[in-house]
Length: 279
Image 1 (cartoon, rainbow, N blue to C red):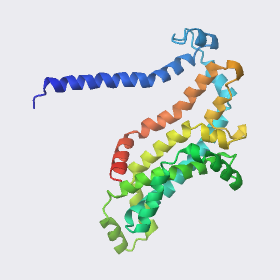
Image 2 (cartoon, helix red, strand yellow; image 1 turned 180 degrees about the horizontal axis):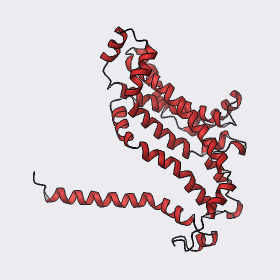
Image 3 (spheres, one colour; image 1 turned 90 degrees about the vertical axis):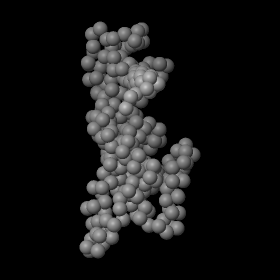
């Protein structure tokens, strides 16, 4: 089939636009990277210049000042608790609500969807009080439990739509063979919903890793700070900021989540398309 001139022009235009958008997106990372290797004075005097003598010692300083190992471990505890809770509860809820056709099932699914549109700032004060009363405030594990509660609605929505693509004949065949419901779910359904599970894991990892407001509200002891809260300690009053250490910490904080994202990103498009659109 012959490609018309208009199609070629459109293809070239799209290609140029994608390059421009990619450059705009990557520019802040590039700036953080080159300036993380300069002394503070050079950052402030010529922010666009490449580092003449790269100071990799800035990374050692950032590692020490932010107690990076400790904050990294705290962030992992938050992330592991939150992801385990969201995936475990949402996968079972999404499967059950998708397979049940009664009005009660529709009502509960409606409640999950409705809770997605409630702005976080409107529940911020209430959430803080509830966390204090229940004793989950102040610990990385408790923060992970809060992320579980906040992340379940969106995950249930995605699982609910994805399960619809799985034939119900599988359920009937398993039940006829004497397979219990829990064994059927974990042995057959869980492997089939791995694409949407990867999507849920990536989206929630990016959210929890980069969130600053909720850890600021819930974590009061610096021993439990996440990476972003530890980075915040480098900001001083009256613009007395250690920019080289701050930028080095941000680069260190970005690396694990970027590796995680690029490892599993191929599942995002497939998972969202199969889950959200069919939902």
